[in-house]
Length: 232
Figure 1: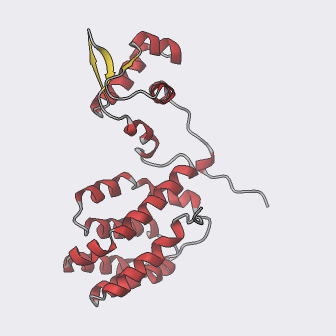
Figure 2: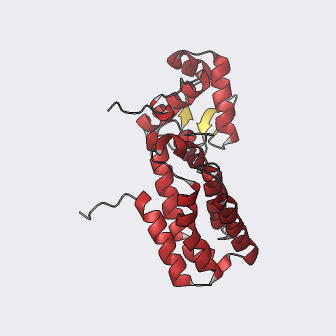
Figure 3: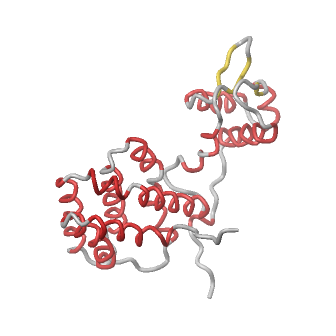
């Protein structure tokens, strides 16, 4: 049987600005540059990448906005903070362009949600539990798979937000593309009935204020997305 080709198998062409950012990232990594170190001048970068200086300026502007570099006439272009955000560029998108990004994000999401389970249970409000129940009720009336992924996004966003951990909420916003990319990865038919059946135990445990059941549900739900390897 011929393998199904998905959008994730077709990488998008990089723009001139993206090529500059990629070049800068590789330059920093190859030379192990750290805060305080200098980057080449605009013209050098443009010539190395083979793009116009306007593309270099656009890339540098983005790096300044992220607080990664500073640029002065006499001081040149210098790194002012660890450039880890450069490596996160492929995750800062509306939709992931590779399966590797998708699976990393799904695994991170699973580990984060599992780790937040006790906080979620302790902090979630009755209003939020009611909102989760409403999502279940809405989806139970829909045919086929219509609305499944939108429900998935809303349901798990409410859960993460219920932890009251601001950083967790920000990270949840970061991996939102998993919900728009999953449709290109999942080959199985995931019906509304399947989704409701899978997520009902979350709400039932919360409605009963049953911590043990909730922790078990979260663990069983997230475990399949975590790559477990034997200890060496």
